[in-house]
Amino acid sequence: MGLRALACAALIALASPLAAAAAVKVDSAVEGPTSADSAPAQTASHAAVAERACLRVLGPVARGQALRAADVRGERCGADTVVQRAHYDRDSGLVRAPVDLVAGDAIAPVAASLFADVRQGDKLALIYRDGPIAISRNGVAARDAKAGAPVRVAMGDGAIVTAPVSPRPSSSSIPSSSLAGETP
Image (cartoon, rainbow, N blue to C red; front, side):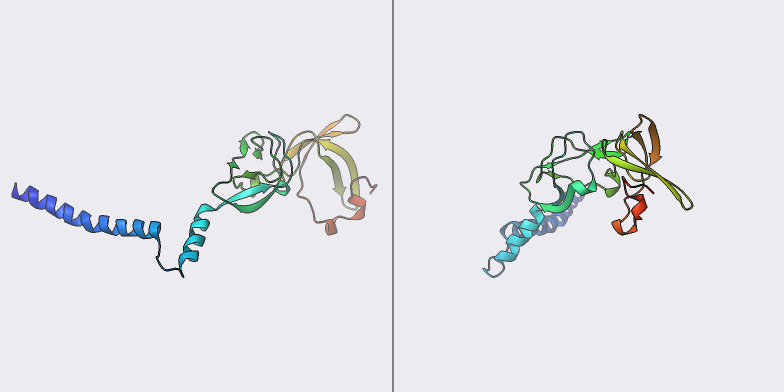
């Protein structure tokens, strides 16, 4: 019995400093400093804890529509902001709007690799290059896709062509003969 009582006393002695230290930390975090000079710093630190990363929608995006990087802007959202979670479409490897979104709505951060580069209905220019020769045809994307992924394109004559999506080049690197609607 003496050994058991000694063991219990040792556990209580070990637990007491931990509990006291934890209580001091919690009390100091909740109550904060009592001087008037440090009160704004405490308020700012509580505000920083309340904010979180989010993406603000810049324009309307229909429910189920693929999200593009150009549709959102990274920002900090307050704790009271309603943040939607984008729907991951496993078949296309893209994220889609969970509900009808309007400008100013917030969604949770999404990896840049999950945004679409081409949306269904986008007008595209298919360009075939072989040395100095370039052939260009206009069409409409039949489905959403990201850079490097194949996309089905409906041509004006009814033909359906599958081609990989190229990343958008900077406007300065596009030769005038390769712009959509121009003859090479």
